[in-house]
Length: 114
Image 1 (tube, rainbow, N blue to C red):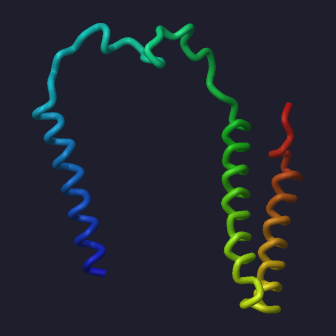
Image 2: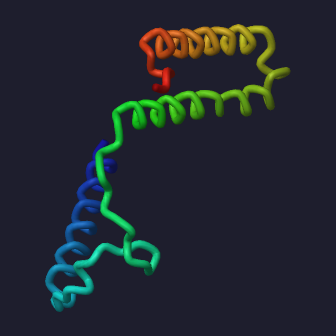
């Protein structure tokens, strides 16, 4: 526990030192060109018109959630024969809860695109 605390304190000290050095030693030459928005070296066509709807972020989070959960299939498939029947039933339980979460998201309308 003490080692984790020391690592945390040293990490904060190092990050704080770098930020302080950047503020103190960094150049301060404001320029109107630097204040312009930058987009691949080209002037932007227009500024963003509106915020993204919450459904966009919800869809992205659901994709990441189910994608990360499905990654567990690869190591399970590699050691499937060594796990035997208990490993099979554990994966069935995992699939059950994964399907339950998918059904819940579907029922709440998280997968409907309007």
